[in-house]
Image 1 (cartoon, rainbow, N blue to C red):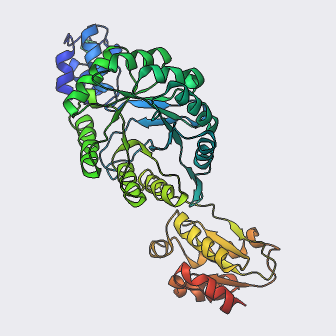
Image 2 (cartoon, rainbow, N blue to C red; image 1 turned 60 degrees about the vertical axis):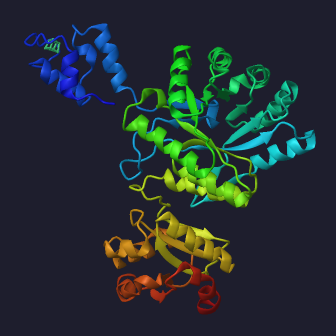
Image 3 (tube, protein in one colour; image 1 turned 90 degrees about the vertical axis):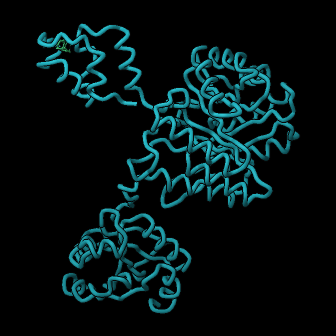
Length: 445
Ligand code: SF4
């Protein structure tokens, strides 16, 4: 936890008056340090012991752990707040899909291929299952190594799950360069796992029966030279796991528990796919850095990815699309021109419904600073002048042979002003995007 100025003052040599730090007093220097406006080495008299204390206190409360390398590496942790409304969450969790190593060669290849296909586009963003977790359920080192070799072709960050360090060592022969997360050091085997993680410079998952034992274990592993750890918070069912994830986060961020200041992971499970999706989505929301699931169906993974996207989107920065003319299908000079705002959810709702109508069209996107239709209209950011300026701009030049524009039903009140400002005929469209297919098929034609 960050120290206050008076706490810092106790660590200073207090030769007030020497002013070599550039401050008139030690207290003034302590206040600058507390506000992170000065560096401790600006005072030449601070002891090494005090320096270590101050540097430790200014370290982030949760370590940033990197899994994998290259373009697809995953950074988790380093979060500073409990709730997204306090600031924002910085490092989106990894969604890991489990690959048991007891599958036959054909099934193994099919599963790995299926994981590679778990990619989607949502509100203009590419999202995917981005971690592969190979599980040594066979308890056979050769099978584990072979499965890891197949899975490593996905070029995604990996988790190696095994009870025996020797089996992990065998698998690392084919993937150590990918810096996989090794799962997991436990109170009865941690020395072997810690040695392996240190030698191979890999992050290490840590698991213990309760939080006290977990904190004790991370302390020992850190003393053994492993800095990058991930805490396995999986407990008996959804409620217990959620409580464990929440307690670890609170202890690390609010109580300054250094031994629990690491990102967490959790394994989703359930009697059926619905329960497993519920667990995975819950852990994604609070507070896992990695969620491991056995599910591979697109309809099962997409909801989990959607929760991740929503939770890790900064609410202060609405997702926006380019305020320009967008084409849906292959529009021609007689195609309709619809107007909407540049809030992504609004735009993609409109675009999806235009696509569904199978009527090729132009969508003119007005810059409303990422606000939806009604909000932008109320805030005076979606105005008749703005729409008219767009219609008169080069964006539509030579695109259409008519001068008819469709505006959202919710802003019908601006239709007269748009006509006056632009000279275009305004057609009031449906209020909801869902009404667009019927509107285009009937009203437009
Ligand atoms: S240099 Fe150090 S001892 Fe001197 S005034 Fe600044 S904080 Fe105090």
